[in-house]
Image 1 (cartoon, rainbow, N blue to C red):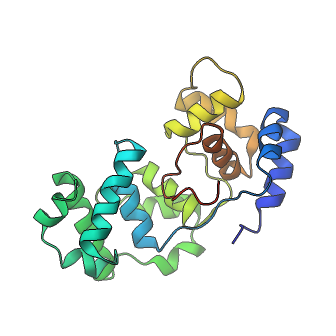
Image 2 (cartoon, rainbow, N blue to C red):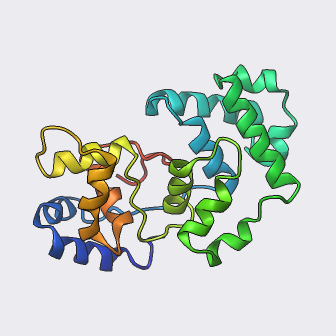
Length: 210
């Protein structure tokens, strides 16, 4: 289901940035779609850290095959060696097991997140091992679908912004932070179109729709 703010966001972005407007017009029927459950979203984000999108998808497919339904309980039933055999590093195995334990024993409370501010959710999530600000921002975008998230550390967003605006190199995170001010309060939509500009596989997505 399309976020309730999506059409308003597209109109606002098109008014503020004519170059972005052209990209939006070229993809009239696409929108940000939620993917999976909170645990799955976070686990996929951990898997994808510091490796290519193609490699992350391959590892994730093997995790799904190994664990069946990827749930906290399903992950905890597997030995660490079985998870590592999927292509996870020792550290990522530790992170995903820690995440599963926190969900299973109630230290993580997903039902509270919808009522919390963006920064409060980020502060809550980064307490989980292996979840940094980037991962928390991906969660806010793809799971909670917050409207004004601008993940300046994401290389795909930086490359996409450069492609849209014909820049010779991607802006630094600090520069991109400033450039993104024009897109408030719909920076999530702007980031999503930056990904689309370079056909980036979205961090949590199966590329559906494109």
